[in-house]
Length: 229
Image 1 (cartoon, helix red, strand yellow):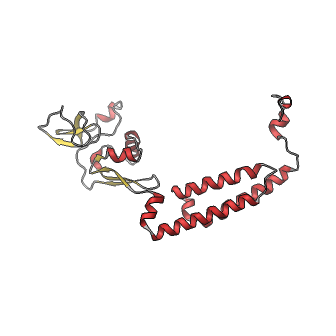
Image 2 (cartoon, rainbow, N blue to C red):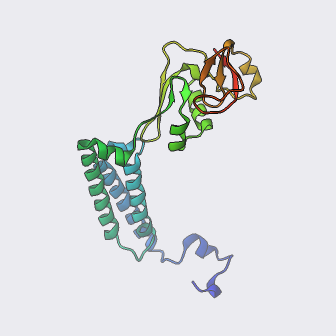
Image 3 (spheres, helix red, strand yellow):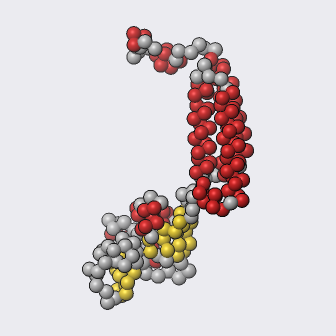
């Protein structure tokens, strides 16, 4: 479009565009075609496309969206290229799924590993850094599961698809409170343990007598507080 033809108040161009009216009938056909193409591709790629997406499924979805977006709205683009893209994506997706089924190392390479971010009521800060999980996100996830302090957590896994799996302690022990400090009224409801200190950074506990200015053996921080029950 030439700059001379551009008008800010040209509502016909803004709403309808520069395509003939007949293209809107064609647009219905294109939309129906691509809808069916996506449904077929997702069906052929397997049930994981309908659940939480892993890396392979997400890559397939983004590729399909990129291949379909332009010919869906551009009257000068045909439908066949998008169909070819769909076939290639389905073939690669099914090949990767079959290869991963028979080869565990390949599955870990394509889909990622399961990582432990809380072990025996203590945060694994190195693993959290590796998977780019912040402390705030971790404690928020625990609170959403009804956990009030780390002493109730046996394991917290972050799955390959980014979901969390929580395994609680059979017998809860004193641990680090994960309730925000500004919520003083709620924090007052917890009983503080006089004989056990807990690292405010990672949740490691130490029995008294213990130097409250000493470094934490796990995270090397020096912030301690009383564990709660």
